[in-house]
Length: 64
Image (cartoon, rainbow, N blue to C red; front, side, top):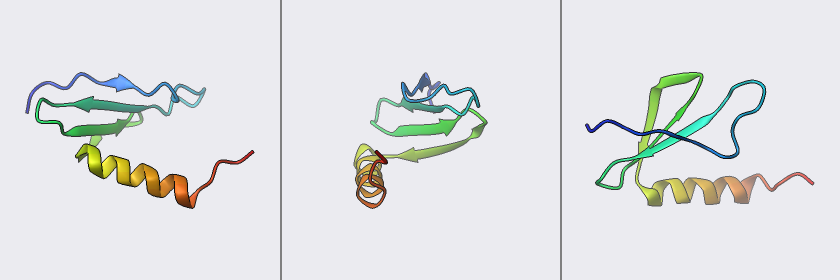
């Protein structure tokens, strides 16, 4: 696997230090990890991540 170049989410960075990082590979695979467990990496295709985000938004509406 090529070296991954991680980018921190713009929504991360609270005082707890819990940050979500994402990286991509040339084949389009997305790699996700949390800063507190960097060795645990989730691998998915863009369609899989999009489906997960749609589900989360649908089942957990924003609190206002």
